[in-house]
Image 1: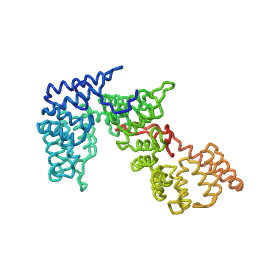
Image 2: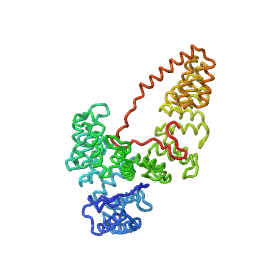
Image 3: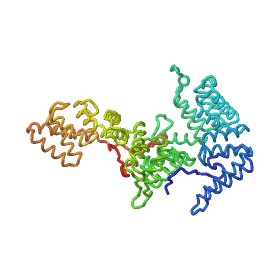
Image 4: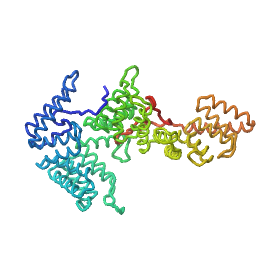
Length: 558
């Protein structure tokens, strides 16, 4: 069954509704009882045919913890702060979270101090007094042994914070080394990243030289300490093969390591495994059911690319032979696209825009569609840049503006989007939105034709026939026309144009055209080398292209 929303995956009392109870020292019996009851209900709710109302259980627990918080229980106040951040109750705001964390921090709660310090830095970056107070909370939490606070303090120390914390590589490195020695795999991974990138000061002076051996040593140590991001990163190195002699390509070892990280809930590792099983990478046989399982786990862990991929699957449905792996559910797909779009994923914003453009599931709303396309366009997605250009050109969802339309088409064309290159060619040929220029038209048509667009080939043939922007040459016009016939599977218009062209050609011109055509065909055949599928990235987050399955959705060059 595909999950269509983020689901908290909880095990016993270690992780209850977003709380890591292992880090809550001296937790009161009342608080323990409340969380144990919730954990039991959450476990029961996951069983088949369970009748447990988990929402009612969560509401009851929040009410009980609220009572304990009013009575001054610091763990209860900390829990309310965490739940406010997760939005588990009404009127949950960052301000409410900070108030709960402060009530706990004032009683010495180390976790609350770490959370409160981080929130204050985000909320009041321009307020010197609050920044100073936030750093004090973080420093106190670090002194109390909180790993998150230690890493945050290391980052602040590396960058420097005005007069409060002078920038110091040595002190930042010492904090990470302290955490690493205490078994904090995330701190060890931080050291690995420092050595991998090296550190320069503002003047370009090397403060810490790059050291690949040390970086790998720290990465391996972080893996030994059970850090799942490090596992995913090292697994990607083994999967793809690294230049370092100590890391030889070993897909089987990589997959095992990805699975270890996935078992710890690492979203990137789950997404990488989804890619591996979906595409049959690294000697692993294709297994769509396994791919769906891992993509879903990654999506539920908040991976935007996985949310988008599961959305693709839900939109069009997935079969393995006659077996339905994922039932078609456009509404659930849209829900996931929305969640993914909130993380800024361009492809997800594009697909939400396509839903509004088509009036699929939602009411047709072109201004809203334009807004989503524009977000994707600003993020650099060529398809979206083309859409925004078309909306401006046609005055759809926004006021008509040919100049703005041409500018967006140009962005998409610069990113290799063939349809935008074709449209720009036509606009240049007509002088619409841009100065008239047959040379510019020819340049754009050639780019689009090189990507296999029959209409661009016909337009190039026409320019060569007329000598517009290029030197008149019927032989080359014939070559483009013949290529258009080939690329369009002998479309009537292309065939008619070719036949009309041939009537005005001499036998010598036809012979020359055939030679050029045969040469180009031979060159194309030599360059056609089926490239292997790409392996997962180190983050496992490479998304698929916008889906072609739903109404109003189109793939490349739409």
